[in-house]
Every structure is written in structure tokens, then in C-alpha cells.
Length: 132
Image (tube, rainbow, N blue to C red):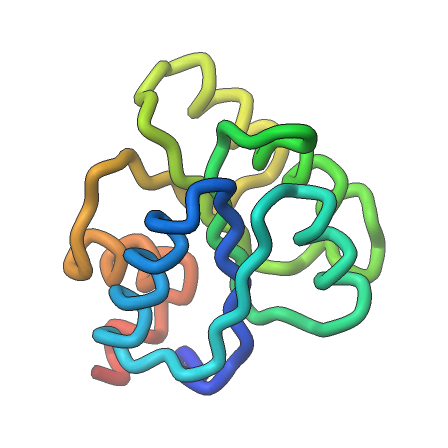
């Protein structure tokens, strides 16, 4: 199955400029249904009331980090299979390993562009590359 560009995507970041940047990149890629949350707990509330096809979350946020959000999502049977991409300004190996162990689908290091985002999303949804 190809990626459904109309599926709801949740962008989670405590920095409103970053939300706007990711939102614009997603729109460039053809996504039309984009929500946002400014921290992990707000994101979790949204995820429990609406089914998202993809979550793109920053790592460093207060009070609930993207890593904590990922662990909560993977622990919730209703959310556990939601594709999750982590975004961070730090490329620390231990962070990547921790995120992988927690079940992240992919990892993006800032700064990035639409081409990078597309590649990372295609890796999460392998059939997307064939559809474009």
C-alpha cells in the first residue's frame, strides 16, 4: 500500500517555528491533514482521541519529551503500531539506540529538508517510494 497523503499526521514540537517548518515540508510532499501539539502530553491526548497515520516528534520538550511520548505510545495497545519518527538536533549514538529500543520507526537530525523528510517517511512506509 502506498502512503495515504490524506492520513492524519501529528507534528509534536515545543518550538512553534519548527512545527511550521515541518508542516510546510509535509505540505510540499503532498500531505493535507496535519495536526500539531506542543509537548508529549498534549500529543498523547490528541492521539487518544484521534487515529494518526504518522507522528513526527521532537526529542527535547518539557514536561514530556518525545522519547517519553514514544514509550507511552508503544505501551498503549491502541497506539502501539502508530508509525513514529523522532526529530532531534542531537545525533548522539546513545539517543538513537534508546529511541530504536523504544520502538521508533525512524530518526531525523535537524536541520533537514523536504527530500530528507521524504526519504525518512518512505523508509517507514516502504511502498510510498513505488507510488510516487
